[in-house]
Image (tube, rainbow, N blue to C red; front, side, top):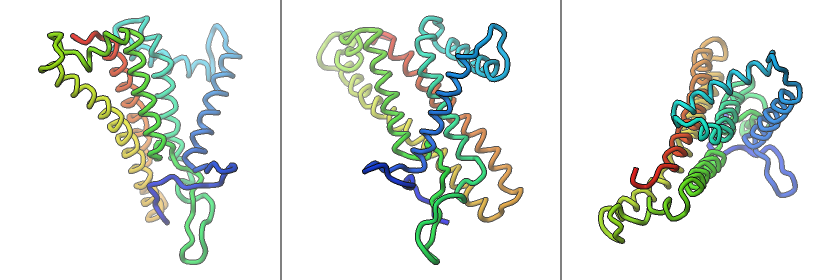
Length: 250
């Protein structure tokens, strides 16, 4: 058994390396797209089956968003991004818990040096993905703030003091605000990656040491952690979006 902090390469498409984390991300994306298309295409006035489940999840998410924003119009504006982040992160966290984690894959090497490159690796356990998602999220926060307030008013948050002077305490606060934006990216990236990767390592070790029964409590724990991380990431994004729409004096 070999634990790698880097997502393992399964094959290449031309010069593009396809890792197990990337493959899982593509599969989850296609699953969510096809599922939503099927539900929308076959929707009925009285929901049933998958439509009923999805509508319940969306309603709960929308109510949660409205409780934060206190604005129905703004809640519907933020809903597509928040719901997409939540569902995608949730499913890629959970798919790494399927049977075969760390044990089913491609054999790499020979003899005593042979290792298995697993097919299953949560996309959130790849630092490249969490960094990319964090950059997209922070970019959307800035875009939302500029759209809501305009470039000049939003820029006051970083470059103009509350006393309309070029220097002083307001300038220092602006510098801190800039640093905080970088801090958001780092925090988003390593919080999600660290929790999910640590959980996968724990499960892999337990499955190799004691394959039966003992790993079950850890499996249920990771199901809970995967859900909590999806909620935390999406709710922090929501709070930052809401904050970005407030004037600089707030």
